[in-house]
Image (cartoon, rainbow over all chains, first blue to last red; front, side, top):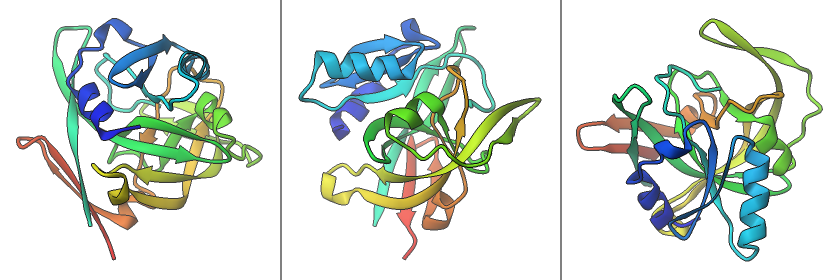
Amino acid sequence: MTYADYEWYLKQDLSQYAGQWVAIIDKKIVANDKDAAKVIQEAKRKCPDKKPSITKVNNQLSIFHS
Amino acid sequence: MTLTYKFNKYRLENGQYVSRPRIPIVLKGTGSIDAFALLDTGADTTVIPESIASSIGLDMTGQRDKLYAYRESSEVIPSKVDITFLGKARRQSIQLQSVPVLITIGEQSGEIVLGIQKIFDEFDITFKKKQNKIIFKKIQ
């Protein structure tokens, strides 16, 4: 992960991925799915030499997410 | 040593906007994963979904327990994980070892939540929403 990916992520509207996990590499969404394990696998398959950053896109009003 | 993070502005499905404290971390077991996790001052402990815990090889042999969140409960397994809090430069990053976590079982709906246990013992954390800053100051 780079801090640049974090700063890029903060500025994105990811509402199209609501309810899904996304994987970010070099300021791009490289994989998305409801299953985090699939997202990690897909990101590694697409970019075997890079390490993705993952996060969950939750667009529901929430008090606790687990 | 301090680390500074920001709130992540979300547009909700109802059109409202909310700001959530998102923290760039690395979770490490036998493997590791980079993630942008939610910091939750209302969570007693850190919570990780089973799919993530499996992918980084966390020990999942602990005794199952229940985690209560508002009116619902989830089945969880206690474990430990190393967490690195990312700095702007790699050398500024700070690692906490053996942070207690609860692994939520069989859920695809959860996310990575950073809770109070250990993390709030190691950092003084200041929220400055108007300045869009979350400041982690390492307690010496």
